[in-house]
Amino acid sequence: MVKKQPQGLVEDPNKIEGIPSKELFIDMLVKDLSLRDAIGDLVDNSVDAANKHAGGKNDLSKFSVHITFDKSHFSISDNAGGIEEEIARTSAFKLGKPKNFKSGEHTIGQFGIGMKRAFFKLGEYIVVESVALNSDFTLTIPIKEWRERKDETDWDFKFDKTPNLKKHLLQKTKLKITVTQLKQDAKSQFVDSQFLTDLQNEIALEHLFAINKGLKIYINSEKPLEAPNITLISDRDFKPAYWSHSFPSGLKVEIVTGISEDKGDEGGWYIFCNDRLILGPDTTEVTGWKGGKTKGGKEGKELPKYHDQYFRFRGYVFFNADDSSKLPWTTSKTGIDKDSPEYSYTKTQMIFMAKQVKPLMDEMKKERERDNPKSERLLNLKVDAASEKSVKEVSVILQNKKSLPTAYVYPKNLFNPAPKGNVDTNISFSKPTHRVKKVMNYFKVDNPHDAGSEAFDYFYKNEMGKW
Image (cartoon, rainbow, N blue to C red; front, side, top):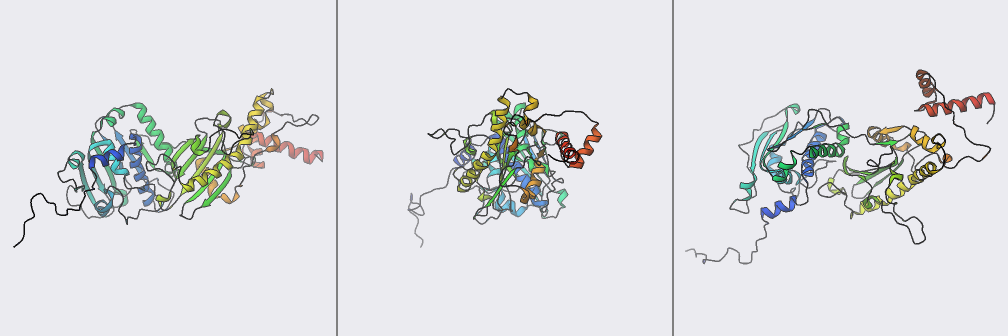
């Protein structure tokens, strides 16, 4: 005869329930998450998928991401391989990555919460349609019903019907996420034209490398986003400085510093993690722009406060790791983990390298402040005539990093005016463009100013006999 459990007693009198409430979990996930960052999480997943199915090639031209939204819906779709049924069943919709889950190498998805917290941020009713290489399925998630289940331990989702285990060609794959019953925040911002502009600019900057590899991203437009043209001046007179380091954890970092256009909103540090922009352009204390001097009046260990004198500065930091958990970023991927020992070590080098560029910008300012006409500001003229390299070319520069100096190179001979009796004179004249180009090609220079200078030196040396 089985004894009945006395009424009022629990199965395990020592058990204390510790399962979190869904409301608290959802609130904590989206508490500090902006709407743009939530959408950015979904784009990150699409970029990861495109890189995975590109087969290690730097060509993403076969892939595209389409985002549309208005006051009643949000949708994002891509053609980058979909989600396999098994992945959906075991990990993709889990709130956090399983303990033994192995993500792809060099990804930007790390924590296993990006897609789910985007759902919670955007709306109450989600439909996921996936066509993958070996399966296809549809999944509907009514968030309100899921949240209000009587069984508080039931956190699972269910396919609309048994997934179809069928093979598909890569070009036929897709992943489409549609969100309706939008949250009030989404309803109001989705009809704001400034929100659309800010989102387009943010995604274009964050994924400029993927866009430059051919990935097309459309956001409420028939035209794909264009990657901003971040640049560095690089020619025979100005050579960017390069530094790299590998940490025991498997994290690698590369830094390139120099100057570019005189644009204050583009100057500063740009920090990338696995080719995704995480921070920048940054001119705050986070990247060393602190200001202040020692008691003796000397410059402090960090950089001065950022102002118009340094608008030309550009610093690019590239953190890369096969295991994205080793990257020094925040969970929202909108900032750097300032407490990371790897970032602290790197920041010291960033400041050191920026200080190598600083004397050039300081001297350019002094030259502009002197009572001399623009035609005699030789250093500023040299910088204005120098060749800028786009981010694509910066990537090429990195590939040929053995040729880069460890210290920034610039024409120090122009820092001070020549002594009396040996004053430089500017020579200015016009010649047919096609002839000028031939001279530029002959001397292998990038601009008419240098071509004229080379031609004069060549004539003087060969015809005058001596310097």
